[in-house]
Image 1 (cartoon, rainbow, N blue to C red):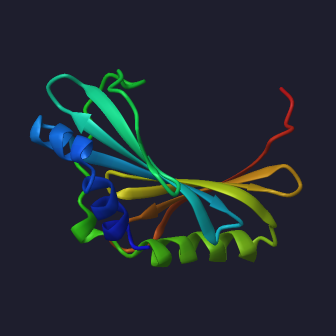
Image 2 (image 1 turned 180 degrees about the vertical axis):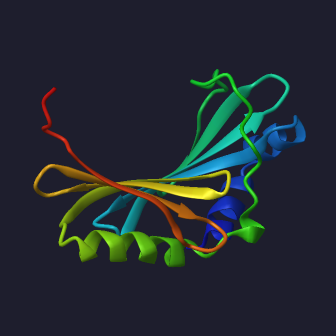
Length: 153
């Protein structure tokens, strides 16, 4: 599914439509992926700029709506503009290429799309975490980092 299709599917729900009428807008999309290929769950976060409340919609076969909650960071979340965004497949291809280039074997990935960036954390065999930030409009790598899950202080 494309990002646009994911958003359209979520926004077919009457509860989502009501929240949007109340002033909420889409601020981020989070994908939970197995082996960098198959997204098992999508979560869309909607933000209200006046109340600073967030509600989320989870798609994993069915639609689950969370109650409005205070965000972890009491800050402004910008509205996500998918019209300036490369396709999710193109963005994930950049992530896949970089991870496989390092000969890492991915287990799970969490990918967040917000602002103008895709942030990916890929958990690999060997207890490594590969983190990438990719520009949404040009699919260029902005930041790349590898860390060890078992690192001791």
